[in-house]
Image (cartoon, rainbow, N blue to C red; front, side, top):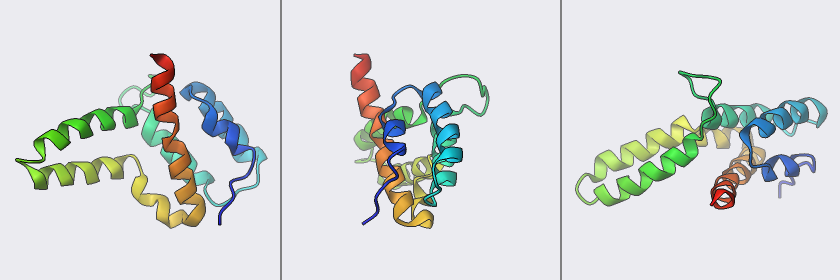
Length: 124
């Protein structure tokens, strides 16, 4: 079973993207690479960087979750297009790359997804 290096626990508990960016850069250089550092950077870029306005803070995962709710409602009529849209969205968020990084990649993906609900409930 894969065990995440201890330094990354605080990174996954952090809710603010700006702080997570700083922690990501620091941990990638200071912690031993478990094979998933490149994937962590890709996940962060896909989730929090707006290609049109790089300085703006965004959360693409939150946007995709909202879209998925709408897709579920329309899936009764347009099942094929809803499935294609979900697969495209998961690819944009780099979910499909987790397997290339083995157990470290799968664990990284699962731990990274947990910050979204905690961040949303904290702001309410």
